[in-house]
Length: 280
Image 1 (cartoon, rainbow, N blue to C red):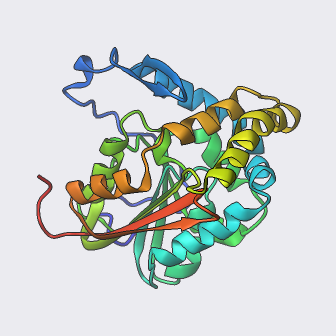
Image 2 (cartoon, rainbow, N blue to C red):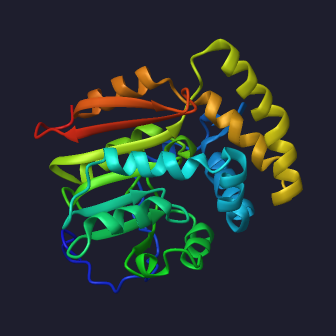
């Protein structure tokens, strides 16, 4: 695999996550963090997020299409285009889930490029691998199970790092961004697609009504879980604003950071370039 020194695996293999333990791990775990609107211990959030995606994995793509009226496909195509992927690039799709971004990336980096889908949830990856759409592209993806806050690849391995609708689920979002910076080569390209909140007051009120009343009901009817689709809008509301994300990315060491809002601000894309300077 281009750009991944010391790792020789056939495409499609699922690799167990790294067993390396952060030396500060014992100091963490009891601090309170947000899981939607609730405050829970750090370790409990990790388990809750894993359980959440275990529950929704089978219907995840169907629900995304239903809840967004199919718009999420347009958002993802726009985001991957903004990432500026080129033929021959090595790409890591962090929190890649069922692989929509990875599939789009494969089509752009062929024939000599490579795409790693990196996700902590095996159930989501397996659901993506079984999808009949884009079956050929899915076979070209290398599936790696691992924690986005401690990516099990060496530094400066990838030409591009992308994440779509996953960073807000991390216990420590900044750790995930810093890990993406670390595994990028100097000059490597970064892209984050995430939900946001509409700026227009009237549209925001309508969006809130839809999010908190309709989404959970549809989740119950079509996915069998009202709670899973109560967490979704809550987690979106707790996510920092585009301006705050831009400032965070610049502190980490990304340069030329820009953001683009989509569909009246429901989603936002941040892109940037890894500087050659060390992280402060």
